[in-house]
Length: 422
Image (cartoon, rainbow, N blue to C red; front, side, top):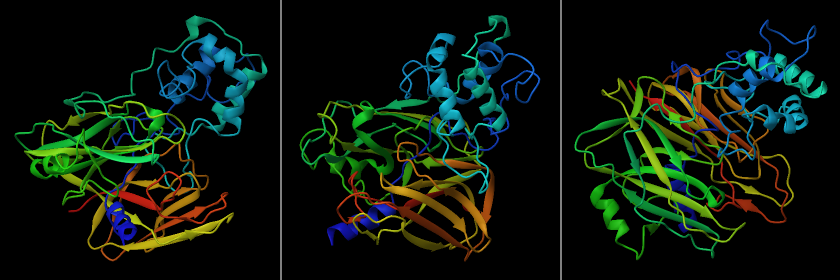
């Protein structure tokens, strides 16, 4: 019974948001797959001249790589100078031609998304030609202007943390801990962007921001000794309203223009952190949340609506095991984006409106380490009684039966819709 309740709570609450770099909403000016240089000043591939770093490759790297591949970034090495790239040119060409990098999981044939990191064929050809020529440097005079910083929020109104460090448990290795963070609001404010910064990324599985009344959150906080409280399945408050979240690969998230999630005066945020210490000794963590408010009330207040399938049982060594579930829309709505979520055994995931024959997202090669909230370049209308379908597929390479669970070694099948209702 306890596991069943946890499934129901998480289906109403769990999230894992954003991707490497900034996830912008429509109209924010983020580049799409066709919005960056193709690797040469005259367009197309370079067949009649030497391909150089400054003239041809650096524009691609700036647009596609440097949100992660910078000093202190989430990538394992920087690509900010010619020396950086020269040392890695073979790996860069290989990753590009096999489309391992930049990480971008959705099939282009399904739908177009804001901030796509997909390389064009011309960009791939340019990187391959440069590497084949032993990565010539070229003239610094050909370098493009420095890129405009896009790895964070345009501004930050408040920075929040739990007020102290928390060291997760080592037994069990999955530790769900909730903390009260109070934005101190005396009037309603609409959140239009957030940035979650885990203190120890390697032991943080995911982070969820919930909204709660101050009295309920403080009551839960006082129920256990020490900082915060144990919170498997959800925050333990009467509301499981979600504000946002973080997973491996995430960066700052800005909601689509004209939308946001409303925080009421006096409400607080419950910061739920899922720690996993199976790969290292537990270390003190202080996860930080930055919020960006709209200067005026947003025209369309948004919410996250969950669709999940928790009744699956993946046999040992099974390949291509699938489960699905359908949500019937209760009212007309506008969908701006989707957030699919599985764990490490995930193989593929698909979300669609079967009533309208619309594909929302199709990820044929799931990668747990690169999850995010995908915003459509144009929002989609959902009519009352439309059927929205979620399908998950797994390859179970273990010798155990795997079911829904909150541990990293368990699995999930979940999608969130970022929606507004007229």
